[in-house]
Length: 246
Image 1 (cartoon, rainbow, N blue to C red):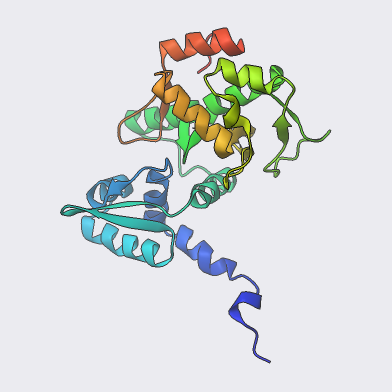
Image 2 (cartoon, rainbow, N blue to C red):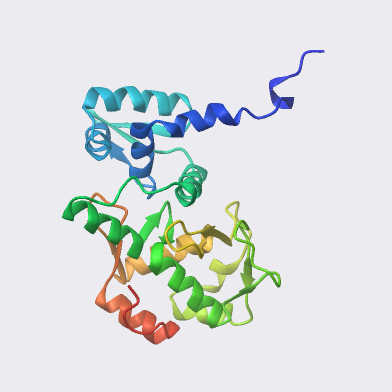
């Protein structure tokens, strides 16, 4: 009897080849904040010609990694799902650095991403892990088990002070319920900090709330996320995170 495709062993190598090309990897990384970019901007991000970018965009679209929308004369591309960003973060944890940044611009950009960045729809980097640590310290989050596994998507659960602490941060009680399709709590092992940061629907709500309150701002054409002076003041006051968070 012929084995059906649905019953066959997953062809991991086929998917891995999509990420293995440097141009495609840079395009996907440029879209990892969940936003959409035109082909020209993605060519600039990848450091290739528009024709070369167009070829790789067609490959990524056919593979289901990105989607494209037409707006007037322009076509805008975005990641097909949050799972693609999660894969990129996972690969980044295993990957060696390309090299020591050899320009001031590259060094500055790398440092900014490590301080804070958008990972699809939540806060990552040093800022993301510091917020998560503070939520654990305040018992808004509590370890789900006695041992925190580096590979676990769910190392923490809501703690006894969750409602009060998240209310202090501007979230309503309904934000803490799990009735929607997106998991309320999920955690990523941060590639730059080697510790967990909060993701899932709750992580997305925090990023949205902090952005609206002008506690964080995203750098133009970058995933880098900057904590504002107001944000540092408010997080210090509400989470006792101290000064010099970044």
